[in-house]
Image 1: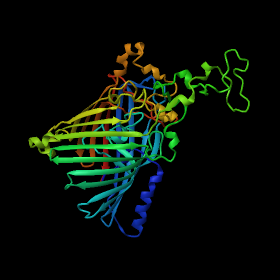
Image 2: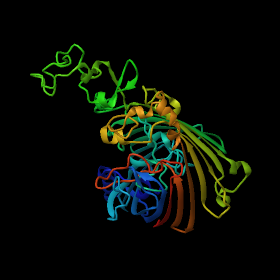
Image 3: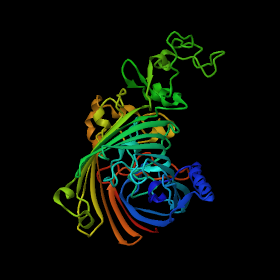
Image 4: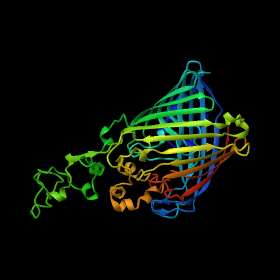
Length: 494
């Protein structure tokens, strides 16, 4: 089982607990140690057209070099243990600047630290329990787009591709447990998951999930799933922050204006509210820390009239794959895959006022095709995605202000997206600029242990900034003309 750190990202060093368990068992002689996997990958590419944090990043170079080491073993043929460690040399981006940082950075990390326990016959398990830190990929056909259920948000319903890896990253690095139960001789497979939220705030909550995969005939596979995001929280109050930035007026269902966000929000009968021209206006109210005398206009909407947005909610996914090669009698080993596949998600089942009123704005749709090349390439895939939404694919509000809003933060006016305003409606076309995304992926095995990959895409890849190692709020591919390409040389000993 190859689980290299280059493809699966990084994780807290606490995941080393699996490594300690593995080594401890080896000392007692109860473990069969498998051959180690050692490898590296070199990425080189370019943002042909794109914008990062308002700066033009067209023709900027993309390059990263990663190394990894995987050690694994088995105990009594029932418990398999895997640990991957490695490091990545990378270049950060200065937010708001048009030239990249040329000082190379290095980061160590853990790519996986997991155990897999097989119930029943190890050769044909009746069920499996996977635990620790591990990669989850439920759509084996997806090469870049899709995989929405675990690596996309709920409120806000952001979409994410890539990560620390530019390519071969259409998966989710989960921390938690997964129980897999095959039924009907493997034609129907159930997956029960409980993963910790650890990418975008609020972190450390637990989100239970369920997936079903059905393969009724050899050339057809369908699947679906649901995740209850942030269902189990050690700090439930942070799921719906009671602050005016995160508020809407219950009677109208509209967010507060930029001015009203900073208003006191006192009740209308509060003695701190004074008439216009009162000499006490602006002075501190005795015995009430931080409260000044204000007029009705300065007070804004009373807090009792407000509702608050929440991170907590359900997201769902459905997918289908049709193997045309099997139908046509192709030899996949010689011709390559010939498949049509698609995935659709609803990122937030329950509506919330204004931002999340329309379900069609929370439904990304991906369709792809794997094209046979009859030995020229090992894989060639083209994927398209349509996601119609007024709001940007941004993580600024949850990442930097910990509020469940689809904006870039407190400085963004929510009414810039109000189609009931004739001025905004007249510029409706600007909200369609990033509705359509695409990706082309190819791979070719050069020789044993050496593989060449290439990807050109307009997707949702975000870059990491300096000096704080944080992702940009939005991907650089905001316009229809924006795209990048990356080539990877992957080599290793197995």
